[in-house]
Length: 48
Image: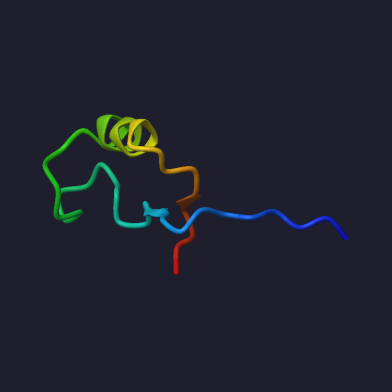
């Protein structure tokens, strides 16, 4: 079985939504681009 290795750091994007209650006023796309530019290779998009 092939296994993938992830880096030590990841980005949790569950609460990164375009909703007033998301707790952020940043553009979600810009935040993801900044994470990718910083070298993040794993983005967790799970609901819970």
